[in-house]
Image (cartoon, rainbow, N blue to C red; front, side, top):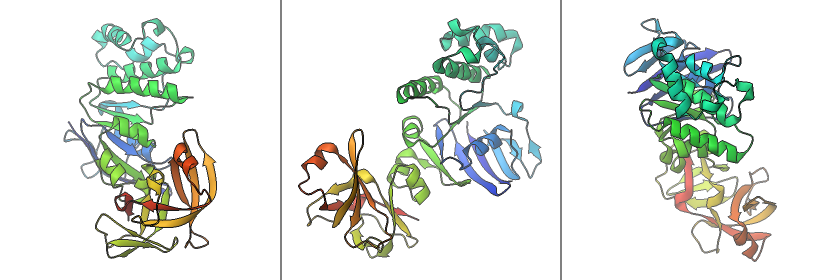
Length: 347
């Protein structure tokens, strides 16, 4: 089964231009806050109507502007998991689940099955305000699965006050989705969450979707600056192609690249952990001066200025193991290098 979306929507000064396809391998909709992720999911679910285009579920139109088809949300077979679950506050856990069961004759039996499956028997009579975060998510998942969806939409589903609880919530969600065979679109701004749970990713940048790629491909070759930022890259600088190398006028540095240079190259990206302390004779080695050093929990963040940098050039951010920084003989001025394979070519 597949879910295809190709539509356009004008929302005041903001617009969506979306083209994506999801199947049984989970698709991440990866975007920064305000990029339009929730609006995309709402268009697919049917609570927001695009201006033009189409949305197909296994080839059947849910929305088609040319054919004037626009199925209401209750006929789209979409399981929509909102942030924090969005449970009915006046209903108990069992009532929340029962409200989603399509077969009234089997409702009581189905509710009992999902209470057992999601370990909610003791919470069955509680209302949402009396549930802990784990119980709230289990109830939201049980309600979603009880609706017998053909596809699932997750709108940044993980929110928790601490990282340990968030990880537990993530594991619960992953377990619930393990045997679901339909399309899943997982909207998130967290690359780690996406890497652990999704096979493919579609970056959404200011309402415009980019090409669907594998998550591994996104991290290795993001292609655009917005995708690189979302994949965790922290260094960006203007670039000019020169044969098999790039010249960085703001840093006054020329770097050899391992990949063919496209004619539309405007910028490069370099991940902070891939910049290494180096001997001067290494490939792509250049001298820098440390401007600021910040000790993080498990590493050192070193902000540097290349020796030939312009006054308005962005600082170079390095992230080193603490032992490596402690062992550095000179912590003021030193040489760094960037592997030719670690230079991200961005359009």
